[in-house]
Length: 173
Image 1 (cartoon, helix red, strand yellow):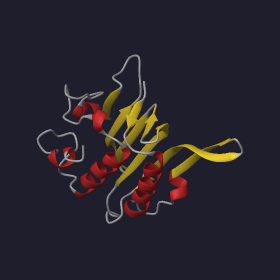
Image 2: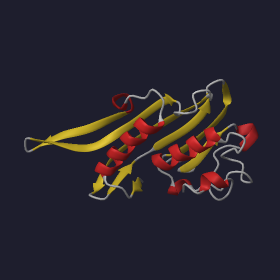
Image 3: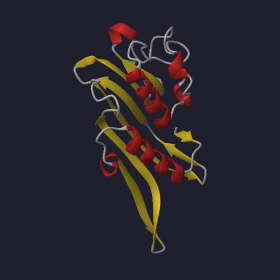
């Protein structure tokens, strides 16, 4: 099972580079994304991209303790879509290990394919839509996750998982 995104490979790479440059503090594009190539008939072709944004903070929120970690590898499916076998989009408080939200997708035998991990005591374990969260992870991609996380850093009193206060984040889906 793979997750498909309705965006061309060229647009994905262009847009994520733009997000990295415009939104993340001290993030070098070459440290955050690897372009994967192959050679066919003597010609170099892009086959996909590996996104690896690790512990980066948002511009304009340098005083925040929140950092993000975005990981996924995408590859071309059609001219207008890319696919991934898994993704992990996380925001966490660098000074409080229990303060984190991670959106995960991976086909599992024992766990839901799309789920949210967070402080289990406060929010529960392996949250799924619509049973235990109002966040539909099947509609999520890295751009939407970055937008949600950026908005959360601006409004940390409105927790992403609080169904009564997270309306601002749902609009990105």
